[in-house]
Amino acid sequence: MTKEVLIHQIIDVLARAGFALSDRCNIRPRSFDVAARKDETLLLCKVLFNIDGLNEETAREMKYLAEYLGGSAIVVGAKTRDQMLEDSVVYMRYDILALNVQTLYDYFIENVPPLVSAAPGGLYVSIEGDILKKARMGQSMSLGTLASMVGVSRRTISKYEEEGMDASIDVVLQLEDIFGVELAKPINILKSCGSRKPRKKAESRTETQEKPYTLLPEDLILNTISMLGYDVLPTTQAPFKAISRDKSSVILTGVSEFNTTVVKRAHLMSSISCVTETQSVFIINGHSKIKSVENTVMIEKKELDKISDSQELLNFIEERRETHDEK
Image 1: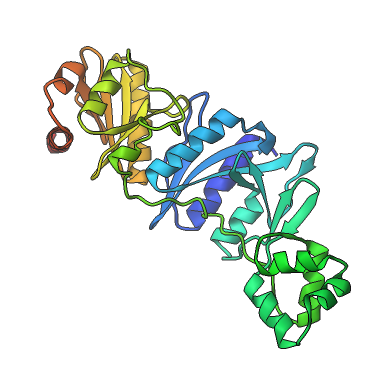
Image 2: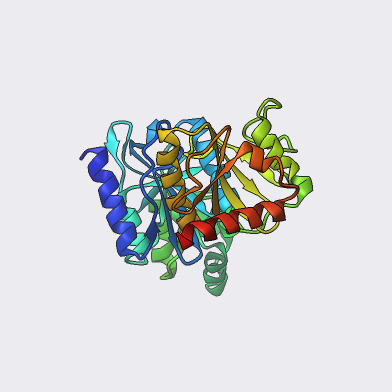
């Protein structure tokens, strides 16, 4: 299987599951390959034949983009090291959940969540601690007795019940056989899904030590947008220069001089903005030959300089888009 085949399989699964999909990101490097939305579920999907190809910088940007957009970042691949990814098993790379196409299919089409996670040392399952404790106490069984039956310590059983420790597959099967109940806790692939509510200004990524990149003083255009009241997240691997967010809006923000590459990026930004339900703007440093590309509004730097706050910027975007639609 090639990466190209893998991408087509992923797109087919998501489309069959009812997701609206953006165009594929065709830039290098790229923090994600496709954005997908179904109702309130937003995915930023990175496709890697070998999931070990995900690097820390890309993972960091994926996580921050997902947080800003109120979605989840996932990696879909085919192998790790010298073996294929197992079905119904999830893997973690830099705190990004990774899985294969079959697991993606099972989750979104068959509504069957994975139960097993891969970790150093083997495959593990999270246990429904409350169910285990209720079943044990229902049989008046002590922690020590149960521990002896499955070959673990009394403290380990206590940890299982507190949901503070995962168990091996063999242990979970033994426990389920003893009590006749299902104990494996389903894994929520969307667990990283964030709120679409903006951060308070005091918690802005550009104002804390948690920010992934430094907003350079010489980047005057992004600084100008920040001064309008936006929390600005610069990117290094996305088709846009930054995501700008205030209390009421999120804007995919491109910055460049006008050229043919800008037009291509604006098309892609427009597609992504439709899926992520955001605004899309390209700030042109100099003269722009066009006013918009699909849903992406082109704004010259001199026009931006005349705007005084975030609401005025939104009004400008809306007016320019309406003018484009009328044409």
